[in-house]
Length: 400
Image (cartoon, rainbow, N blue to C red; front, side, top):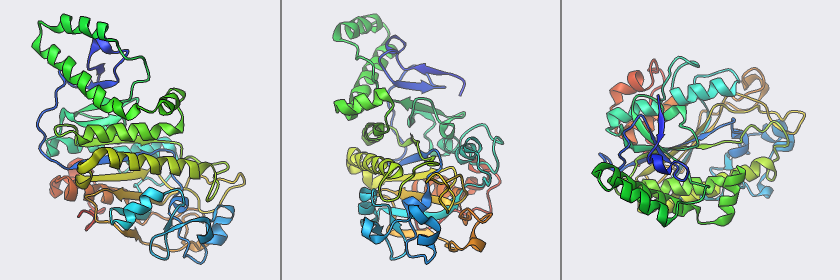
């Protein structure tokens, strides 16, 4: 990305719809696919053993200690061995509807414990940090025919690396500034009246902003947006769903959901992590609702940079680890299963005696979604999209 500019320079203070490396004109064109792909980056390293407790493992309760959750605390059983955290009620409904697949002992190729480097590998799809300068999803836009700057959207204050690169994409955030009044808009329309391109751009931007901004109709949510509160996930996810639901709208979206670095007071069934999981769960339900019928053609993949330690630390939290959990949900998903090459939680099975080992490569999950759901040619997955990744074969049977 070289530049990032307002779709309407005269409305920069009020509009949050922007393009980067794209012309000022903004009008959705016909799109080559009706399928939707949403990538949710769980920044901060989600505790996979908390989100998806292996409560059936005989060592689970002992190694987790104060962080262990038992069936009396509302665990959502999945298969008699794994469960979802009590806060993930909507995800459990997706699982029961066979629209959620869960992955354990999964991680990118990164094996150290730096958030910065781990997120770099997660987003670039490289084998190590800072080898590549663009994101794997940006590289996939060209073969998908979605590189026109209108078919992929990042819902974030700044474009994430995953969607940054030569292909054009769009950025949107709900505005928390005062909306321009009709008198101001009338003056802008008059100024643009002699230019058909700018006039069309203005009209389409106003219409799109109104469509997306409908997700922000709850005053309390607007207030939380202004304060940077964690409750901002629901309007963000709902707004993204409204954009993706448009007949000629974007087909790919990236959302950031941070706050998973739980070194202190993580909690078990209740507490800090539980509230964050509840917010994520509610946001995902809002995304599904706002997508409407388009949900049946949607796949949502959620991943984090690495997992966390198996044992609690001295502050009631967990530290940076290796293997963790990931999720694939949506109406296009063949779900109702937990995919885990489970090796147990005994000390000799842990990496460095402290972490879940990484038994599945995250790139294998990403490849499966790109190929089987979005139609990226299989032959370029190991080279152009994820260079030097041939050993990480695409997972199978994940898309309905």
